[in-house]
Image (cartoon, rainbow, N blue to C red; front, side, top):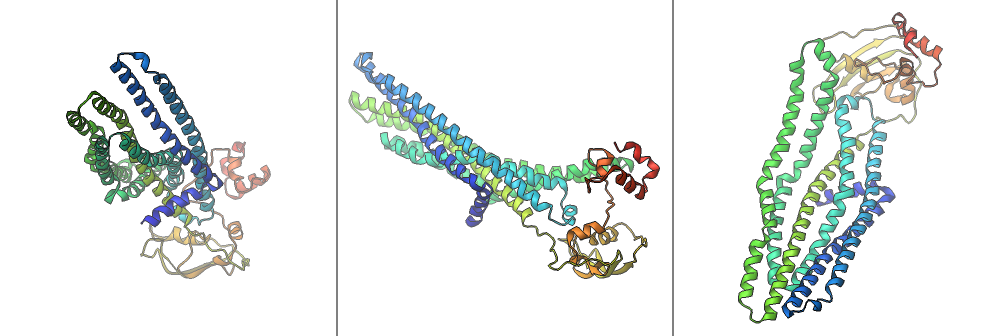
Length: 476
C-alpha cells in the first residue's frame, strides 16, 4: 500500500518534468518560512520578559532590550512572509505545469483510442477526470504540499522550543497534540482512507448523468418522458449525496474531538502552572514560572495552526492521489493495434465471417457467430429490435472495437490489417446522434478537409442528398 502511495506521488511529480525542481525548492523555502514564523513569538516573549523585569525593579528604563526584540520580531515575520511568498510562486509554477501536462497527456492519448471507448465512457465523465482531477493536483502542489512540508518541519522546532523553557509545561502542550493525532487518524485512516476514490467515482457518475440528461432534453420532450429520464440523474445525485454526507457524519465526532482537544490546551496548562507556582519560593523563581507560562500561552495557537494544516493537507493529499490514479486509468487504455504490414482493400465490399463480439466488461455477447456480405455498390439494411446488435455490427467495420472471434473484411482485407488512415478514408459516418460545431454549415462540412473549396463542399452536400434543403443559401 505504501509503495502504491509513493508511486502516485512520483507520477504526480513526473508530470512536472524539469519543473519538479521548483516544487522541491518551494517546499524547502516553506520549511524555512515556518521556522522563521515561530521566532516572533520568542521575540514577543522576550519583550514581555524585559518589561516585567523592569516593572518589578521599579524602573521602566531598564527594559533596554525591548525595542531590539520588537524589531527582531518584525524582521522575522517579514522574512517569513517574503520567503513563503517566494515558495508559493515556485510551487504554483510547478503545479500549473503539472496540471497542464496531465491534461495534455490525457488528451493526446485519448485521440489514439478507438471510438468505441467513447461510447463506453461518457463525455461528462472524461471531462471530470481530465479537467477536474488535474485541477485537484494543481491545488495540492501549489498550496497544500508546501503547507504540509512546513507542518512536518514545525514539530521538530516546536519540541525544541517547548522543552527549552519548562519541560512540565511543554508536556502539557504536547499531550493535546498527541490526542489530536489520534482523532486525525480516525478521520483519514481505516475505511475513510478509501473514501476519496468512491467519492470521486460518484462525482464522475453525477457529471456524466447530468451531461446526458441535458443533451437528451429535446428527445425527452418529444416523447413526453421527462419524469422517467430524470431517474438516472436523480439516482446519481443521491449516490453522490450518500458519500458526501456520509463522510461528513463519520467525521463529526473525530473532528469535534480534534478541534476541542487542540483548543483545550489551557485546560491542562493553567492547572499545571498553578501547581508549579504553589511549589516555588522567591520572587525570581515566581517570575520565571509566570514568564514560562506566558511563553506557552503565546505559543499554543501555533501548535493548533500546525495540526490544522496537517489535517487539510492530508485531505487534499488523498484527493490528489485519487486524481492521479484516475488520469492513469485513461493513460493505461490501449489503442487498437496497428498492422505491421498494412494492406489495401481491393474494393468496397464488406464481409462478416462468423463474428462474435461482447462489449468490454460484459459477458453477454452482442453478436454471436454472425455472417453476412455487402457487395460493392449495393445497399443493405440491418433490421431488428432495439439492442439486437445493428449498431454494434456497424461499429465493427471502422474498428470502434475489434472482434473476439471471426473477421470483418473490406475488399477482401481484414480491417485489422488496414492502416487507420486508410480505413477512415473508406468509411463514411452518419451517427445516430448529430453533433454540429458552433460555426457555419460550410465549416462543419469542411471539418474533415479544411482545404476543400466551396464548390467541393456544395458537391458533397448534393451527393449527401442535402440539395432539397437549399443548403447553398446557408453555407456562409
